[in-house]
Image (cartoon, rainbow, N blue to C red):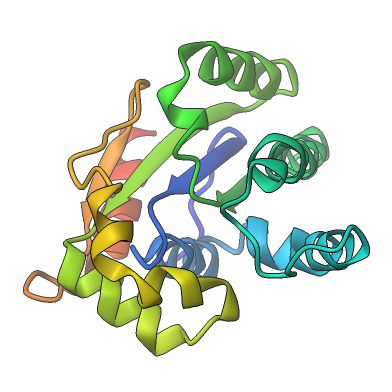
Amino acid sequence: MGSPTHARAGRWTGGYAGSGKTQLGRIIASHTHWPLLDKDSTTRAVVEAALEAIGSSPHDRDSELYKTVVRPAEYVALMTAVLENIECGSSVVATAPFITELADPAWCEEARDRVEAAGGRMEVVWVRCDADSMRRYIRYRGAARDAAKLADWDGYIAGVDLDYAPVVDHQIVENNAALRSLQEQGEKLLARVIADE
């Protein structure tokens, strides 16, 4: 599939841990040659070093300190990188959970305004995944930050809204093992993007 030509876009690909959001981001980036900015890849080393420096586990993603201080800074860094790419004339794919952000109308409005001020448009894709597929994907990737989730899977999944949807206009990709491959769905998603231009 060729690289589509259109106005600059900031494509947010969100979803719960193990949903396939980063894989979908890679599929989109590989077909379009847009830069891929994954929150974990771009901030993990700094986050882990900071957490260790303050005496926390480098894999902590559940404490109030992480949620109220560290996590917001990760999203500021990600947004800054997205805007810099758009300002330089490049569309960009940003992958992160975005669970809190895409449920907050004020955050979404500010993000859209900033992307539009930089000369682009904001597009949101939410990746949905059933619990069994999610657990399988999380086990497969073997990330240390997922150990707590897997140790108490029932407790973790009880706090996951499998029917979650962003409060802004968005597209849904269903990434369940029994459905079409994520590769195929990513390609269909890109075909719709091109057709809408």
